[in-house]
Image 1 (cartoon, rainbow, N blue to C red):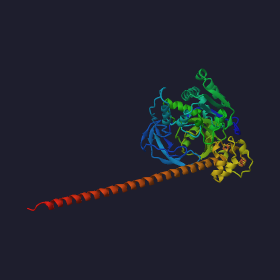
Image 2 (cartoon, rainbow, N blue to C red):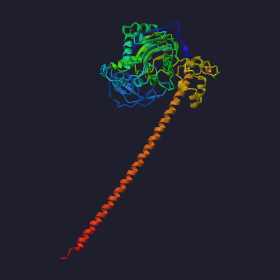
Image 3 (cartoon, rainbow, N blue to C red):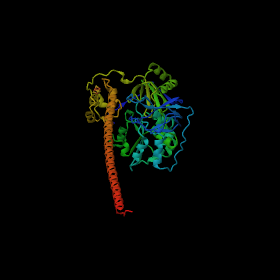
Image 4 (cartoon, helix red, strand yellow):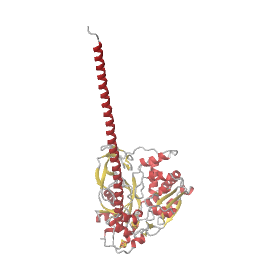
Length: 493
Ligand code: SF4
Ligand code: SF4
């Protein structure tokens, strides 16, 4: 891989090698929008009871049993810092699950895909795409490659390592089940060389040793080699065009946590939680929590602090700011009750590395040297500042994987990735506005056509009515004339 950064944890840092499960919360917050802010439709009404695992809308699963309250505008764990319509789920404390039987071996592909959708399985590696849709695209190809992505290359993000290390047998079983379903020509398990404990746990598993269907690919821990487009290119030589998904080329690249979620869903367990790493901003202390989706951020941090004195101290010193995501790819937000969602793999307590005031670009080109996507971040920055979509396109904004490497090396402390994130948002918004305008135009044209059609039909009906009335009038006149004639012919008495 070109560029990137070899990052390591500080010496003497501590990692808590236990997974702690957050207790049930009184209230969960479930955004009624997708990650791209599309409003989700639902049949559910306020006051309605739901069970754990029940699907409220596409990709929105009740994390426990309770009662849905009316939608409110609520904080959203998104770089836009917007508030979005959100369901409040008041937990009843019973945590009653929706009965969902494991799928039988001989069910159809469609049954399996429907199960993944119903169980809310989405990518846990970042953007939260629908896993069913991704698999469906891959299955359209006869030659398939499966890449299990266990490349978690930001320091301070330890959740995948903890999953593989603590549940090695289940991970291997889940990988085998996915291989059985997808029938790939090759299955590559990509993992970094600094995760030896996880590699040992997985490779010594009995099921793996009896049936070694996975090909291990150990990569040097250089950030961001886990980004899908870069990983696919590195492992298969396939260059994905900007906006092209690996799935459209027959490659299923799926995060190891998502592989577990697929397996769990097929076996009757909806996707209601994930592992999250919580660290101090200096990465001296890290712990791993199992958190249900919709859990408020402040509750997660409070619980993490209760499990680890280093985190408690960091939270005491930094009670207001947190970084959602890893040290490079994450974004800052206030500590509030914004919910934890599928794409959140880490929380860092304290102000981010971007807290120094930026100065003017000195054109040193350090950012271009580390860019793994071979971009010119300094040019993208200028274009992003002027919101010039043509220039952003010219400098291939769409190929930026928002890894944050350029931020780290920039001597001017320019928050380049934040600019690129917002520029992507601006481009997407314009595309959405154009699509909305085109849809509105089509609807307006269809409406006008319907109005014209109705007017035409009415005119025809009116004409028919008029003709019928005239005909009836003529008929009546004819009858009256005939009667008069008959009357006239009658001899008088
Ligand atoms: S690293 Fe920073 S200062 Fe140097 S060219 Fe890039 S944006 Fe400009
Ligand atoms: S321009 Fe994008 S891909 Fe390149 S280093 Fe910066 S954030 Fe990463």
